[in-house]
Image (cartoon, rainbow, N blue to C red; front, side):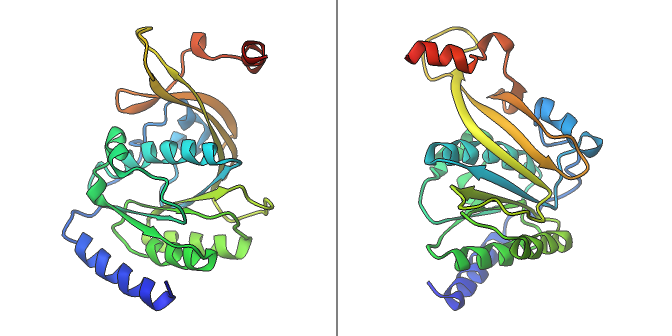
Amino acid sequence: MGQSDIITRLQQDILRMQGQRPVVGSLEGKVALGPVLGAFPNKIFPTGAVHECISASPAATAATSGFISGILGSLMQNGGSCVWITSERIVFPAGLKYFGIEPDRVLFIHLKKEKDICWAMEAALQVEGLAGVVSELPDLDFTVSRRLQLAVEKSGVTGFVVRQQPRKLHPTACVSRWQITSQAGYHADEMPGVGFPCWNVELQKIRGGKPGSWQLVWMNGRFQELPAASVIPSQAILRKIG
């Protein structure tokens, strides 16, 4: 798919999505990230900015997608839609409902070439009224990240770049850098089953804030700190599988 085709599709799909409500009102304090909020300036998740997420494996990419979905659910609660740009069809649209996202409010764009993904993300980030834009991209240099950041500073859209198995970690203009991995599900009532989804969340960089790491669970429609009794230390895991 060439750039002219991408432009045409973006224009057509965004016109279709304009029938839905744009984001209304301030989102300050409405992104329910539990204890992680204390790491941000003024304890508010930075919207209208680009967030970089590092994934070292396909499993980590899936975990990162789930974590971002939880944030997007908060960003979309006042209306609006989002764009998700991928090279592989790894996101299950119906599963987004678990995070409070209606699948018909998400425009999925599948592209193979990195330059097309970069271009499509920059174009989408310029569309005022979108709640968020997610792009899966292995590499991101400072120049490209700066263009993305300039786009959101004008539009107010929040962007997420999921870097799948990056070849090198360059400095970027993104406001934050995250690394998300999965953790065994949490069973609040000790009943058998999959349990509530959990993540190991590492905030490696945050402009004007304090990096840190947390274990989170998605429960009752929001992120919460994983109860200490359910956190299994890495050495204990090794003993179990050794």
